[in-house]
Length: 182
Image (cartoon, rainbow, N blue to C red):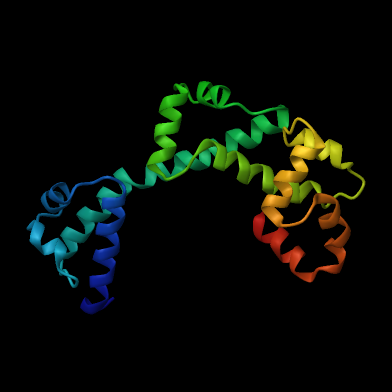
């Protein structure tokens, strides 16, 4: 990687760290540069300074990214057992729901947003099985009734579950969408 290509890399690293809550002063101190250097569009850092920034990313950013995936997996697991509540997921993680909300917020995620994503992905999977009744799909996804599932599905996909299932064979793009979701 040439010297000119490192400028955008450093800018991206600094931006990532700042979005994770690392102050400019802490960044400058950790990378052993002046704060003003971070404002320059083509910051030039030595390999050891780049390595320090990478280590900071590994310690401050990457662990939080895995938290959202862990919560998603727990939501999917609990959803298969019945309805999902934030209290139950937080208890599985040995934390309060407030701590769960806070940790998700650090990744710009919400519990309800993750629940919605997991439900949508599972709905698309269940609707591939034509013999499975829509009321069963709604129940498996933790909806209180079919109408609530239908409203959510229409919000996600722009069509009702029945229309989606009926038109699935006629739409070549749907197979690609379903495989992309998995």
